[in-house]
Amino acid sequence: MIFEFLQYLTTSTQIEQAKKMGYVKEAIAMSARAERCQQEWGSHYQQCQQVILQATKRAVMHRSVLIFGAGSLNDVPLEALSNQFEKVLLVDLVFLKSAREQANKYSNVELIEHDVTESLEWISEGQAMVQTPTAWLDDNEIDLVISLNLITQLPLIPVRWLLNDFNLSEDAADIVGKQLIFAHVNYLKQFAGEVCLIADRLDIEFDQQGHEMDRFDPWWDVEPPKAEMTWEWEVVPLREAASKQWQKNQVGVSFL
Ligand SMILES: C[S@@+](CC[C@H](N)C(=O)[O-])C[C@H]1O[C@@H](n2cnc3c(N)ncnc32)[C@H](O)[C@@H]1O
Image (cartoon, rainbow, N blue to C red; front, side, top):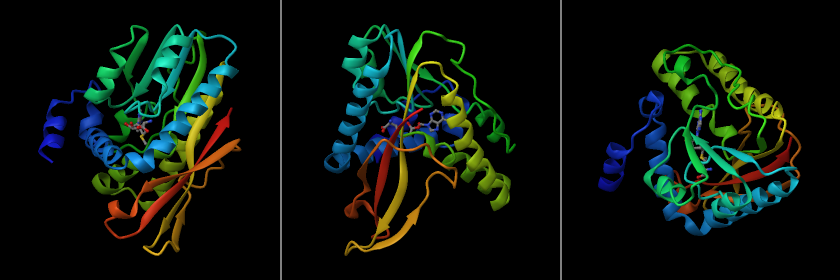
C-alpha cells in the first residue's frame, strides 16, 4: 500500500486528466494485480505477444509500428519489435517507472503519453463530447498499428466520471460509451498500414463453484469486427474477487 502510494506521488504525467480522472491510480492498481496474478495473466500476455509477432509478418514494410494501450508493456514483444522496425511508438495515457526502464533499453523505442480518444479534455470538464481522433493518420511511415487490450477500457473512467461528477443521465452516459468505442474502431480503420485489434469480447462472472452468474458485453452493444482467433483470460481469479465472483474474459483478435 505504501509502495503504491509512493508510486502515485512519483509518477509524473504530461496529461493533466491522467491524474485528475484516476488513470494513474488505475495503472498502479493494475500493475499490482498483474504482479499477484502472474500465473493467470502470464498466458494472456504470451498470447498477445504471439499475435503481435504474427501481425508483424503481415506488414509490407517495417518502418514504424504504433501500439495504442501499451501501458505496462507486459503484452508487448519489445525486443523483437525493436529489432524488426525502424521505430517503435508506444502510446498510453500512463507509463509507470517499470515500463520507462524497459523502453529506455532501446534507442528506437519511444513512449508517448497521449489520449487516444482525443476527448478527455472536454469530458474532464463535464462535456459529453466524443471527438474523432486524428493523431498519426498523416504519418505514412506507419506500417503496423496495434490496439492492445484498450478499446473496451476507453469508456470506463470517462463514463463513471460524467455520471458521478456531472450527474449525466444513464442514457446520455451510455451514448458516450458507445461513441468512444465506435470512434476508436473508425479511427483504426483509417490507417493505411496493417491494423490489428486485440480486445476482450465477452466478460463472464462465476460463483465459487464455477457456475456462471452473469455475462457482460464490454463493447456497449457496438458490433465488434469478426475475431480471427480467441482465448480466455482469467482476469479476476477467485482469490482476488471481493464479492467471491471471479471473472473470465474472452479475448479476440481482428485484422482491420
Ligand atoms: C487493460 S490496460 C492494457 C495495458 C497493457 N496493454 C497491459 O495489458 O498491461 C488498458 C490501458 O489503456 C490505457 N488507456 C485507457 N484510456 C486511455 C486513453 N484515453 N488514451 C490512452 N490510453 C488509455 C490505460 O492507461 C491502460 O494502460
